[in-house]
Image 1: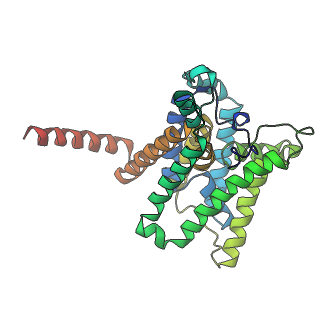
Image 2: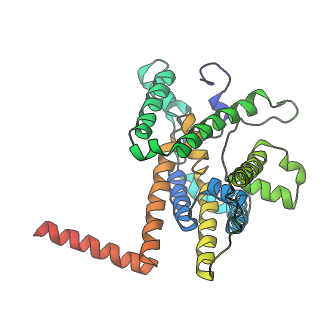
Image 3: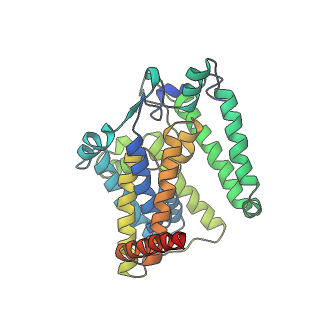
Length: 308
């Protein structure tokens, strides 16, 4: 609706480049999903857990933010820019990297409204057809509020910002580069904290703390043993690197980019899902060696069954 009414110009955002970095989005999503499985939640979930008193999430966010910043502007940025981001697919006619632009070019008329309606109906159907999800009112409410939060973010960074004082691309909720920039701002440049991303990071932590206190769910928690700590540290590093390479997290790519119908959206979500599935399998098997041995055994067993 914001785009159709002219309140948001999608071409000004960072999610619709004229060349799709397909490999970076998919590979980064895979790394992020793998790290998410090792940590047990995503960047947004870590902020929520921190607000509820989970000190493990404080360690996760420090490592996550440091690795994300190193991938964004530090020692890992060269690898990202010179190797991974060179694998791109140019859009036809140099257009935007979103579904409406492709369909508009193919069909010759504006398809954004129809695609948005069809997408909303399809995704809502998946949610409401799941009986367990319908009974989980807290999850349903959280989903609605997150969607409204993304809309509010687009509005805030387009209609409420003074573009003459500080011009910038419209943005909405995402929790990869904002966590990295917030960490950098706290340590080195406090003036850089006066921006939407850093404010949203602080808002999630404070909101989670208020909700935990109100619901009597605030609990101080820490690592149980070194093994758990190592798993969280590795997962945080993978999420930090993967999130920057992918261009967002489960919120940034999964919802914010999805609200624009960006072509990166399905690639990122599929990559994260595959990475999370791989991470869960690794956790169940106990080690990469055990996982590889089980995968080979399963493949050979399936092949033998087919011959029989």
